[in-house]
Length: 331
Image 1 (cartoon, rainbow, N blue to C red):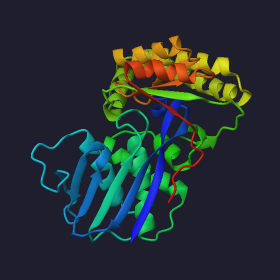
Image 2: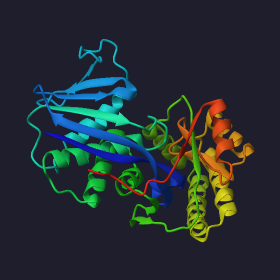
Image 3: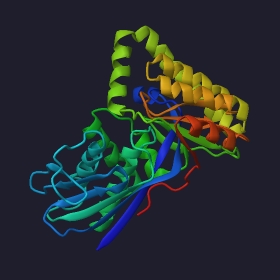
């Protein structure tokens, strides 16, 4: 038996970090996906492979322990750390108690990844959502999108220690979403075209570490950081209105203001800052970090200037154009 599920990555247009403290955010599902395929196993263990990352591993179904392997199936003598961390999300998703019966036999699992890892584009959420959906389908279990998003968020909490439900919600439902932790996601209707270019650095970000650093900063300077988070909330709410009205200019201005506030939280880097400003010089109306920062990606909103911005960012680091995926998880 073979089953496949896929889920999109995401880009946050407004509100990252503030959303961790109950503030709203606006995010889009992007047309770059994680595809998870499950086959009945040829051994008693769960065999994992992510060819794009050159990551291979085995999960013991008795102990839940992960062994990193080479592409030929031998035990890896010098296992990596960062990319191999993706296997933690897969393992945690596979052994969620809320899913049907426990796994007591081997599986062969392959992940095809179109999303840069650690790029702030929700790769871990997309992999988690797709893995949960594939496992539910493999075991012929009915699973609503609401429950899928909730369980996927629990997986991210277990692996990262801290996580907003935003990423897993976007990967599950797709589209352009206004999100609050209290009320969940609402799709934004707009006639506005949203041409986006993502630029990403060779230095990945680490969401868990960055969220923890911002928390420390807030604890040390609450009277300074809390007002910054309040302003981020106002920016996000004004951005929602501007997107609905089709006000391109204001959307770009608000992205640039949001970037300044992210910089004040200490999540920017020299490499990200260069991409942000070069995108604007190439014609982007707005550009900012997307995701946790500390490495990873920026997002540029560039009506009429997509080609120019894409060329400029590719001359510096790596870039690609993204479209909005109206589809969330499919299985």
